[in-house]
Length: 157
Image (cartoon, rainbow, N blue to C red):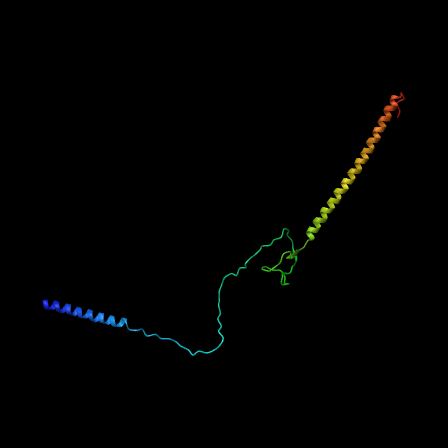
């Protein structure tokens, strides 16, 4: 039995030695490289790039109006085109003209109310002068009546 154990150990050692030799020789072997080649020729190179995203300006200013109304016309930007979102404009550029008919009517109404109030003041001043004249007349009548009564007259006015 001892010779059987020795035989098995020798067979295992021989197998390990053969496996080690195969591993050692195959790891240093260069791997074949396959390259695709093509003949060089001159020509235009075109490349298409496709991307998604948002383009954002350097500076955006939100513009609003203090009044509401229908826009009659838009102004012109620096390029002479109609003002639109993203247009480049300069200081004091008219962006849009709003229909002022509704506000003109309000202004006319306010002016009419001012004129009416001025007429009321003039009438009140005239009424005041009239009442002052009546008061003066009444005072003169009173003074005359007092004078006539004090003279011993018959009391008739």
